[in-house]
Amino acid sequence: MKVAAVTGRQLCALVEKPMPTVREDFALVRNTVVPMCTEYHGYAEGWTGDCLGHEAAGEVAEVAQPGKVKVGDRVVVMPQYPCGKCDLCAEGDYIHCERCVDPTALCGSACGTATYAQYTIKQDWLLIPIPDDISTEHASMACCGLGPTFNAMHRMAVDSFDTVAVVGLGPVGLGGIVNAVHRGARVLAIDSYEYRRNLALELGAVAAFNPYDPDLLEQVKSAAGPRGVDKAVDCTGVPAAQEMAIGLTRRRGQMAFVGWGGHVELGNMCPGGLTLHGVWHWNLTQTPRMLRLIREVRSQLDLLITHRFPMSRVGEAWELQMTGACGKVLLDPWA
Image 1 (cartoon, rainbow, N blue to C red):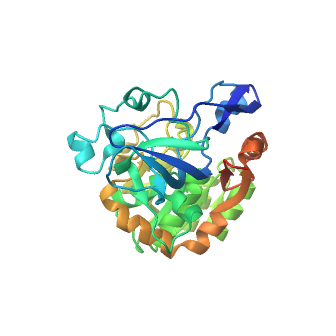
Image 2: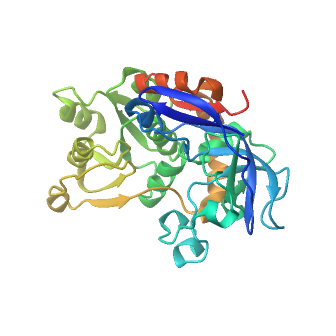
Image 3: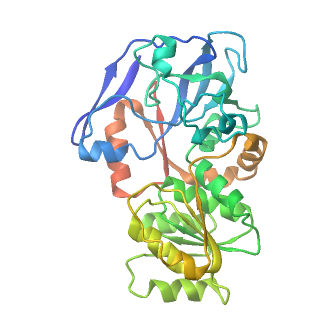
C-alpha cells in the first residue's frame, strides 16, 4: 500500500509499505477521506518519517473476528489505541487512557497506524459507523474538524446566553466557530491570518480580530458587550495566546485549552476566579449528539472544508497549510 512520508525539510514522497494484518478486535479500514491536521509542522521542520496522521474515514475492508463492524461498513476512525478495559475507556473517555496498546505488536504487522495511507488498522469499537444520510467527508469532521471543540463547548455548557472567544483559527479553531454558533453563542474569532478571520465570519462569528493589533483587548471588550467574554477556547497551544485568552475572559468565566504547547502563566486564573478545562477529544457516549451535529451543520462543513488534494500531491497540500490560507484540507489516498 502507499503511505505518505516526510523525507527531509519540505521534502516528501509516497512510499510502498506492506499491507497491515489484523487480529483480535482489530479491523482493517480502506481510507477514502484523510483530513489533514498539524502534520505540516513536521514537513516544514523536516521531522522525517512515514507514520503520519491521526484522522481518517473510509470503509471496513477486513475484520479479524465478528464484532462491532462488518466488511463494507463506512466508518470514522477515532484516534489513538487505548486499552478498552480501564475505567476511562469504559466511561467513553478513552482518549485519556493510560494503558494504550501497541497495535503493530498485537497484530503482528509492521505498519498500519498511519492515516496518511491507503489502509489503517483500528480496534472495532473505535470505528463509528456512518449513517446513510451523512457523507463520508462530513463524517470525517468528527475527528479534529469538530471533535476537540465539540467537547470543549460541552464541558463549558456553552449556550445562547454566552459570548465565546475562539483563539486560533486553524482547522480545529474553525471547527470551534461551527460548534459555538450551533449552540447559539455569540462568537468572536481571533487569528493572525486574514483568510482565516474572513472564513470565521462566513461560518457565523460576529467579529474577527488580529491578535497583533495593539488595541486588541479594547476591541474584544467592545464587541463582547458589558458582560465581556464568558467563555474562551484556545486552539493554538501557544503560551502567549493562552495567556491572552485568560486576559480576555471575564471574572468567573470559563476557558478550555484545546491546543497543546509549552508552559503558560496561570497567575491571573485565581483573582479572576476562572475555571480551566483541559480538552483533547470527545467522549464516545456523545456519538449520537456528534452525528446529529454533523447533520445540522452540513452547509457550514462545506465552508470549513476548503481544499481537497490527491495524496500524490501531499507536498502541495502541506505548502498550502503553511500559508494559513485554508480551512480543513482533505486527502484522497487513492489519487
